[in-house]
Length: 126
Image (cartoon, rainbow, N blue to C red; front, side):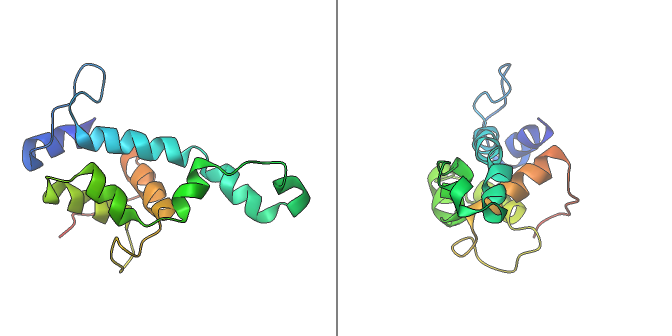
């Protein structure tokens, strides 16, 4: 919730409401990332399980996201607020020295969720 309040105060994002997200684009983007990230462990399990087992599974949302780049998602979700788009691009590429056009959406989603949930340490971007 703090991230949504900060982006609303400093970057012109919408305010979070009583239903948590409200008009906050950053909150909606985080919720979408969280939804994709829930199937990350299942996706990585397919990398170590034999093909016989994997043939019985369907591809996860995270698997579909991991083969795409982050930039189109950022552009579509934050079309009018370049500062907000840059913040989320930076959060999603922690420790990466590549552009969002080259970053896997899977890694981006994992980094966003880790940043917001407090799993990882982050520093000011810019």
